[in-house]
Image 1 (cartoon, rainbow, N blue to C red):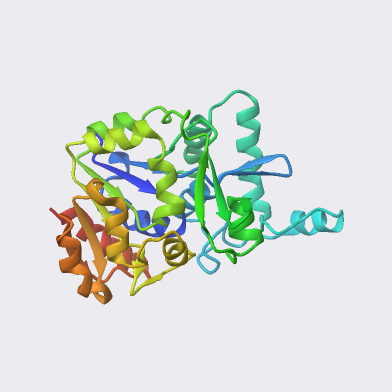
Image 2: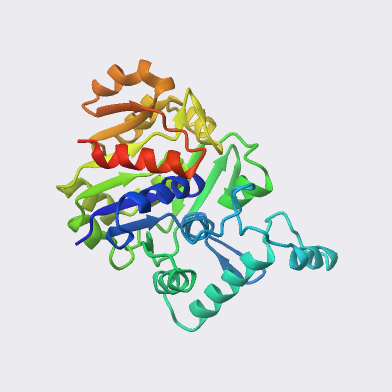
Length: 308
């Protein structure tokens, strides 16, 4: 029986999930990960959001940088630069090993979900991590006349561009990866992690069968706002929301998810938005949502699991 299904993007989701696996038995957790920002570099298939979740739950994430593997070196990247290749996407040597194995499995006929399951097993991750789809769905960012690949916008250009639209190429034909909708159907609770609503969660929701399963689920859908005091804790979520016409606030997050949400957890800094959100027909819990330590993540996970 699936206890919890979590829809997850990158760093914010990984921090929350680190707490959730201490509150809920990992074997009862299914994490549906965003792969809209997957990219191929140097012939390797890289899944940044899946990787940060794997590294965090495996206890090997670089806590200082907030990405990559702790203690990693960058000798391969330095040599690639010396050979004249672009090195704007910072891949450590240990990190590269994961991408080499993933790409090897994909070329041998594994699906992305099968390769992810195998990597999780190798790293000792006990929660079930499933990519949203085995089909190619790619997040493209429109910035004026420019149409940018996600990683080009996010890493290479440092989110400097004003986002005017976001497109999920391939979403209309994509099917959920095996086990995704089944887990949603069986779930006792569904959590939208504190991830960028437009760039991390919307790609998952862009697959119509997943959205339909969520809307039809009898389990309560709860969200944790990634916006605190009108600012994103990490990344450009506030700026992207504002440039696309959404209020960059906890209220804006709640309105973005709309009828999908039954309950949202917002930070104490946003208590002024409580009534506004409740007027949308969504329950609200106000607490400290900052996760500066594992203890913070566990405390927040307990609050989310106890919310009605």
